[in-house]
Image 1 (cartoon, rainbow, N blue to C red):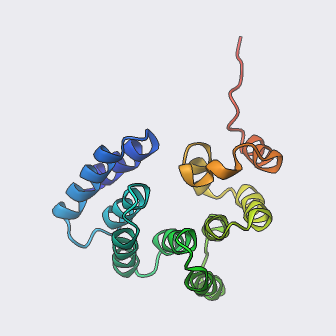
Image 2 (tube, rainbow, N blue to C red):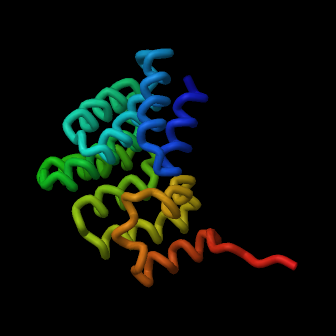
Length: 170
């Protein structure tokens, strides 16, 4: 199941949404309570325009993960992108409350701000992503959720601070 979920993420990053969907489905078939499979499934469903099914998959992922911030923030992002701002802002409040008791990666907040179209706030959170060495920064280079920032100078600075730029050797 882990192999299938990782394969789903790799296919998603490569833009092969059909393969990403198939791998996520297999992960869920292997273990119907494997939250990462549901999260991957929700991620690809959103890209395929099936937002209601994506939201349902992410709710399942959050439940099976005991409230992991990744499926919660992705759900908040989708709610925001589909015009359900109030619900997305409620998700943000849930994560803010959770952050008082446990670590919530800055990426989770940046993602919801991105969905809400709050560019400056999303970039502020992305700067915290770099400062915290948040592992989710690896998604900034190719995840289509960040495409709207690709030509933004501050976003380029964030990527440079992550040292994702290609380095010449020799």
